[in-house]
Length: 170
Image (cartoon, rainbow, N blue to C red; front, top):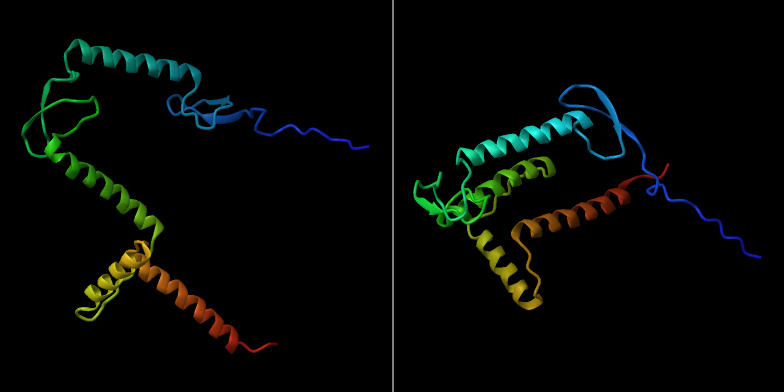
């Protein structure tokens, strides 16, 4: 006889968590994973946000689609095509790359150590040519940075095995 025991999933039952309201400072409980405001403050914030939006709309401070605005990057006028558009079409790529590079710089500083590698004149272009040739033959695209990282990993493994060979058993 086989007996199957049914277990309830932990995810199925919501767990109440305690948070501190960022507006009034009172503690409150909810089953949400991320909560900033208690119910009363959340309701008030929603009301204030709607009121501010309606004031902007009433005072014509909203940018309706099809209106013109001035690009903060180049100073030229442009046609507003979406509510989140910040710059003209000519500056869009430069602007988004600037925003991405700021984000990437912060991420890179947290995620990577930086080392500087000096190569003899001509070795960098020779390396790029070899990697391009490798890409043509294998179809695998590998950057100089990826190549150097893989070479470092390989050398570290070799060093580990050499160190293991040198260690004396006790």
